[in-house]
Length: 498
Image 1: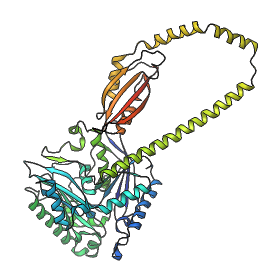
Image 2 (image 1 turned 180 degrees about the horizontal axis):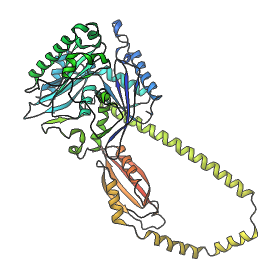
Image 3 (image 1 turned 60 degrees about the vertical axis):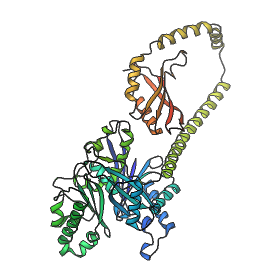
Image 4 (image 1 turned 90 degrees about the horizontal axis):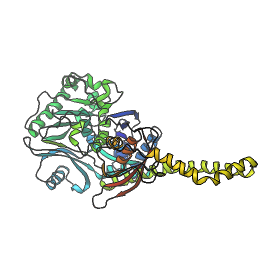
């Protein structure tokens, strides 16, 4: 998995994997130049050059390809909150009513935006839904650039929801201040009602730098305005809520008004995120890491209460992905990802076939040019004459080797290896055909929501002593339910199952 945080000042990139113990291990973290022109190319001249914006985003993927392997990886995009037209929470009557709120807030029809409702509260909290809306053109540029560069985008999320997911502290209200050179905003999470944004143009790095003598007053006033908005939006809000600042300009952290409201304890990742960040840098990397935790939603799909991201989530709060990527783009991205995997495997198979063909040609040439001695010919004739006897003896040996199938231990091992999101519909252990049992010792008919779960199952089976060469066969889709079906075929190894 690869996540990209597109910021005006720089681009943050993280590469990670979900381990078998469901920990998220960050294998690489790096910073690239800014590709913000993809959202603002030509805007300073009073217009937006769409073609140049797409080209700029294509350059992002081209640069990224030089640093990490993105050919068959899922790519998660994070965008700063100020780019969104609406970040707010509203009393929930119906989804249609929320669309009306978007129209009221923007003065435009809701069709002009991609919209997500990632948070929903219910009694004893007020019944509210949080709303994120972003102009379709921003997402469409990303998907067009990704398609042109054969990159599979799986998600586009705002920085705030990704940060809150990294923090994984859902029981306390928490404001974050996103400060850039020319943009600034405060996004507040409250368990009493949801998430909303206050634009804070006075807090831009440029304005604080140009008005350094008044900076403390500017910061205090912006925080006071946000505190008041919280008191109006939520039934309860801490008056001493700590404000986490996300800003590359370290001078912002030196102002007394900022230091006074910073968290008393360092903001840090939960233990199930394995990383090498310095303690003082963890908060800045949370937005780009948190979006990858959507991968745990799939792992714990059958038992969502076991998902460590939501360990302390109050029962009256419901959190889901804030992925604003349209469904058709997600499907195209997933298909493109599988095409890349198939192409890569095809190249490997072709290479093996070429090597085998060359070997066969060499062997053929050797035997055609070699002379067989009379003694070897006589031995061969004797073996052919006694072929039936030899075959009978070999069958006895094979039967002795394959009769004990260790059914119970092998079944237990297969069940332990099964991912939680994968089910069985049929399992067969052993074979009535002795010559077939080594290659097709166990056959499993499985069902899951996506093909990657079958891959995880296959990887787990590879680690079982006594079994060999697990292979995924015949992946099909149930048109009625949308679920995937696959046959997994497992050979018999040399050791005894444990």
